Image 1 (cartoon, rainbow, N blue to C red):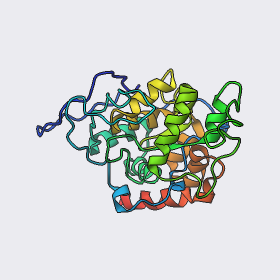
Image 2: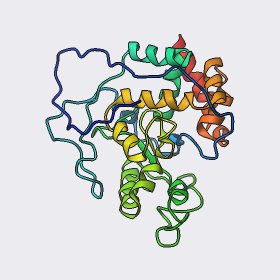
Image 3: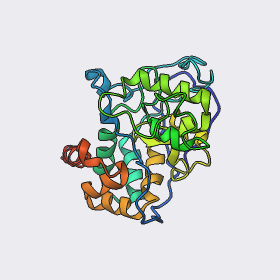
Length: 274
């Protein structure tokens, strides 16, 4: 499972780091039922913020000890575990072997889900906040729908309603003040845009543990993806056979065609396979 760490980020070094070792199980798909939730956020709902949005986060800038980002409304050490360990070809290969699929297939999903930006320029994981997920994760369900309709509602934001990437963090912090656990479940995180709601499928006992891992590095993102895909037989089989419509349905939810996820993944796979 993805390592949970509470140590602050350390300064970057020019010495080549060893290849991170993924602690991944062999794929053991268990469920065949279609999830009632949308496993990954539709990151395509965000507006295009320019060419930098497709490249930021692929290389992590040097960061001094304790110089992690701060988001008003979130704990001061929310990003303290960040290390920025990069993904290498060897790590992608290890993940593909664990899933018995092609490395190009894993890379295709990564490219489409986060537009190649697992972290932003402040070393914060890429997120998308979903108010309808927050609503269903509060107790009672919809507890804040009337008082905070922008943060909690029975429906998502719809086209044009999500705002830019900074707005995602603002909403997350506001929701965190109302219900921390539900707020962390309501955002999709990192390279593969997996909802915090799916923390157990990713090998984490709580949403907070999952989110902590998502702040560390791309390696933890990949570990979560492997476990998440392996938790559902049809999702796993579709990735292995490159059946992109089926994979998108079980990964992005029944509205996948609206955002052309299957086509985008097929095109991304062709590029990485070439």
